[in-house]
Image (cartoon, rainbow, N blue to C red; front, side):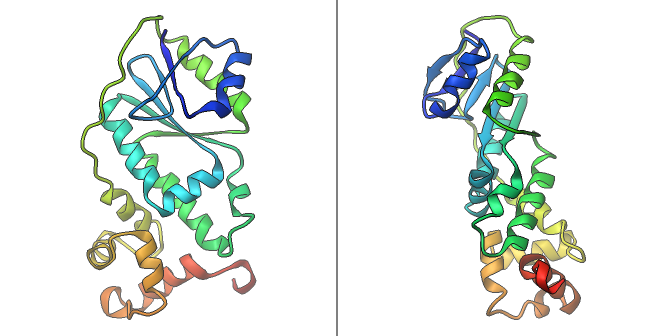
Length: 209
């Protein structure tokens, strides 16, 4: 069997079976689905993708895949804008998602499909590259994802690598930076122009553009 699906991915079992895919089910240490010995897939719904950005989970998951497999994939199932429906600060959420996609694409293939049926067809296409053979998914290695946060900050105008480093020295996560904007003097760290760009990226909504 060359396809292994994590036992917590019950939501996709039916779609995989409908696509004529044979697979084994077991608990995976890395990823949600493995094809052969090279491809590992992390599947995210838009809402899960957004929440995993804010708690840094997706960056950790991606780096674990990259360490363990030569062809890691991040597949987002559904419309990203759907995750904004119940979010108060839609601008911040959208910037977070697009910044994360831009950063993560430097490390893994980021693919978006409409639904689980399309996801199953994607898995089926990948499976054709591999012979059916038993294998044991590798254990994850040590991971680090500070550079991903740095890249996310660099997506904001006027925030280059140096200013991103200064921010991350004091505020280790993107959420810490967002929370600090309400009470701290960022101008003393990165200057007034960059502080304004940071505030606009995090808080400026459609109504006041």
